[in-house]
Image 1 (cartoon, rainbow, N blue to C red):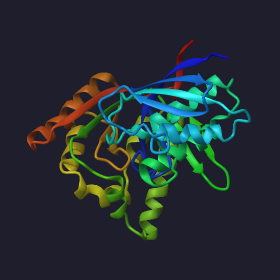
Image 2: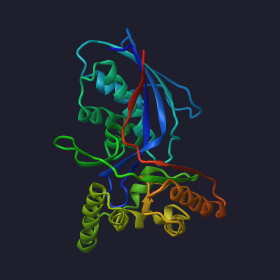
Image 3: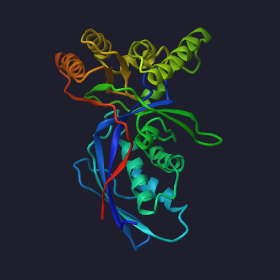
Image 4: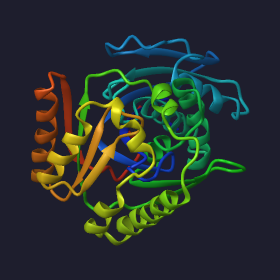
Length: 310
């Protein structure tokens, strides 16, 4: 077994419109770079090689908490030296905290001879997500570990993740530079949902799964609409409605808010269309005087993975 590994852990989309807290999709990039080294000193020590000034106390760091949860299940006493270079900006709405937590436990598993299953790794990484968002959830963690398109069928009484292949797709993501806390995004969600609206949402959930499995892009596009969560969050993201309108006019299949926002994603058939869609969405925020970052890239077929061993 190696003494040190280097892992790339990808950005992810969650919800995918109709699948609130259930659907996730891995991206090929951006990604966090994580170096994990076996240590004779018990516990976890963390160094951040990026400008984001994230905590290095393992009890307050998402990757550190995930590693501590994993170490509780290791019979022998051991420790890790962890170096994190964030390629995914915190608060960007594309699974930054999930990437760090998932990448750390995948790296640890490699150093331990892959003794833990992917379901167990999801469990450990969710402890880190709880530090970031206040709740254990897996909609970003699952694609960060499994890759592709994932369905979080259940977390209790046991974690049940369904990993499905995604058809060739290109993603355009725009991240407007506005602050939107996950807690604020959740406060606006409706406590009850009319049955008729729920039926329409369930139909889209089924349609989106079928669309991915059959590589039916038109069905994917028709099924991305969210009738429950996105309408409630629309006022929190200026320019969202116009960005969607221009993205569809530029050829996007469909899309919506990534996670709790403020990022907006759009799925596309080709790279050229994705580039045009990204530019169209970026133009909306430029007109509003809001700085934004635009990412264009393919869906990721793998989750966090070891790229180097020493």
